[in-house]
Image (cartoon, rainbow, N blue to C red; front, top):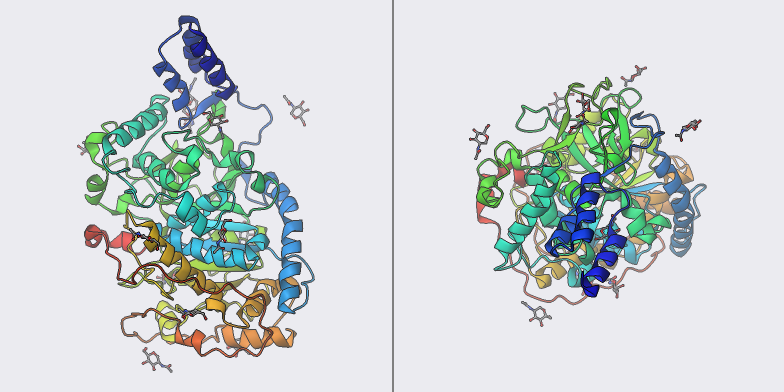
Length: 607
Ligand SMILES: *[C@@H]1O[C@H](CO)[C@@H](O)[C@H](O)[C@H]1NC(C)=O
Ligand SMILES: *[C@@H]1O[C@H](CO)[C@@H](O)[C@H](O)[C@H]1NC(C)=O
Ligand SMILES: *[C@@H]1O[C@H](CO)[C@@H](O)[C@H](O)[C@H]1NC(C)=O
Ligand SMILES: *[C@@H]1O[C@H](CO)[C@@H](O)[C@H](O)[C@H]1NC(C)=O
Ligand SMILES: *[C@@H]1O[C@H](CO)[C@@H](O)[C@H](O)[C@H]1NC(C)=O
Ligand SMILES: *[C@@H]1O[C@H](CO)[C@@H](O)[C@H](O)[C@H]1NC(C)=O
Ligand SMILES: *[C@@H]1O[C@H](CO)[C@@H](O)[C@H](O)[C@H]1NC(C)=O
Ligand SMILES: *[C@@H]1O[C@H](CO)[C@@H](O)[C@H](O)[C@H]1NC(C)=O
Ligand SMILES: *[C@@H]1O[C@H](CO)[C@@H](O)[C@H](O)[C@H]1NC(C)=O
Ligand SMILES: *[C@@H]1O[C@H](CO)[C@@H](O)[C@H](O)[C@H]1NC(C)=O
Ligand SMILES: *[C@@H]1O[C@H](CO)[C@@H](O)[C@H](O)[C@H]1NC(C)=O
Ligand SMILES: *[C@@H]1O[C@H](CO)[C@@H](O)[C@H](O)[C@H]1NC(C)=O
């Protein structure tokens, strides 16, 4: 073996996880002995995406009932809470309101909607970063495009949208076919990575291809298909010190479970969540009776027969699972994913995400078929609950306030109309979930609640307060189709600025104070009767007053600019932390081109 090759082999040895499968170690030993060609090293490197064998831990609790938080989550909160407390103390001091009696638990729900949702959500997050609020958030819950936002945010250590757009995201190359002119090489690489997983006996689907494609555009450069595509959600703390130190919120990525035979998910389909600690579900009908969780690090294992794996829980795969809507797209799916490139996939039957069922044999009410060896998961937007609220309104998490960032495409022109909130409200009524009442979608449009921030739950005391922040075109068209597969950095930059304005209300005096009132209301123990006069003034302006004008409205067609509700605001409260002034806008404000095949995918449009 030539010295350089030996050096390479030793360097490689340091990179190989200690717990590789026996057969892989054998391959590797063989390589060392025989001085095999470098290409055999690729076999090892490819294990970066495919799961790898580990010993089954003797003392692991493989399935726990959903009666409290995961140990890992509790420890995370212990780390996070002092940081939240410090951030809140600073913001409320700047806003001139009192420090809450206890530290609030704040969550963000990030809706689905492909790149539209990812970009506008991250633009709104940028507004929360510039005002300090991101340091006070404990959970971010992401669905489909919102899961891409949550993932790109935490995996990149909390970098802001403008920075990501310029230095990390790769939205200029096609989301599915990869680099211009490089499709063949890209697809060969994808097929190689996914086949390595299939060769271990795991079910693989379009979701694996799709997830790797998404990751290639939004994950850190070190984890792309041409580097090391092995960023698992259970290794988030290992890869991102800011998360380990409690300086970032905990991501929760969701997907809906469907029975094998159905084409689309029901509105009340069970919701499964992936966190850095666990995979599982809170029972959607009765939280105290039926949900279950398993350690996410060992997903794909079968401990009953002693076959354990790590590495199934790739962030790429999880963002793909969360955005698996091919069961709704029909023949469009094979147009998007040319079947000849992936001969080991049948796009007709492998159009859902299947995960080895860690809950096989478990008889909780949430398990439609305890005999199943596989769970079938799809994009939870198919339930019409396109804002992932359930993980934040589950009583166990004791969330005080939810920022609901809604970029759903409910209307014909891809604007939100509150359908997601309403569907969750309706679906959880009579259950243990803590969801405040909201108006119907018509009521949202007639009341203008889909144009500006509205607070829901103001008269409640045992639900979180929901701060609804809809996608609205302040300074750019932010209603691109969910099927947008490519967009220039410049256009994305204008959308980020516009979305940031929809959060900061473009610097409207008093709004930062009102936002602070909303986010600390529960932690102050306020009720409608005892709110401070400043916060009472804010709530009189921003709370939903309970009216639901359900008359069919005219078509909803906002124009670019500050919505009239906001431009006519005169808040008689301290101005609060000053938001950054709007940056000058590069590029013309033109209506975005939409993907021509959109009409073939009505279901997708709602997501
Ligand atoms: C990913 O693979 C690289 C080697 O390619 C290794 O150094 C690293 O530890 C792996 N990361 C994770 C999170 O497993
Ligand atoms: C498993 O846990 C029990 C109780 O904590 C302990 O007595 C036992 O030694 C542990 N076994 C192993 C293999 O760690
Ligand atoms: C985004 O982050 C970059 C790098 O930290 C910083 O220079 C920039 O000012 C931030 N932009 C906004 C709008 O906050
Ligand atoms: C254990 O179960 C897995 C499926 O969960 C299967 O692929 C594997 O072949 C089984 N191994 C043994 C030794 O039975
Ligand atoms: C995919 O599966 C379906 C249903 O089993 C079958 O009808 C179809 O022929 C398969 N397609 C391919 C390309 O194998
Ligand atoms: C786990 O392995 C056992 C024994 O081989 C098998 O009966 C069972 O179906 C497997 N479970 C899953 C989820 O594949
Ligand atoms: C509300 O939920 C009920 C079942 O509880 C269902 O029959 C009804 O269709 C739902 N309404 C809407 C608008 O989703
Ligand atoms: C949930 O299940 C528990 C235990 O069976 C029961 O006591 C409780 O009433 C149920 N709650 C609801 C909302 O059905
Ligand atoms: C993008 O914006 C920069 C700065 O405004 C400009 O120099 C460049 O020409 C623009 N590129 C495109 C493709 O519009
Ligand atoms: C909350 O209470 C106020 C004062 O009683 C009332 O005017 C308002 O309609 C209530 N809001 C809701 C959503 O019921
Ligand atoms: C209710 O909505 C309809 C349709 O937008 C509108 O014409 C009507 O004025 C509204 N009614 C009230 C009382 O606001
Ligand atoms: C936002 O505020 C800036 C500075 O006050 C102003 O120039 C700009 O027109 C405003 N943008 C919108 C969309 O109103």
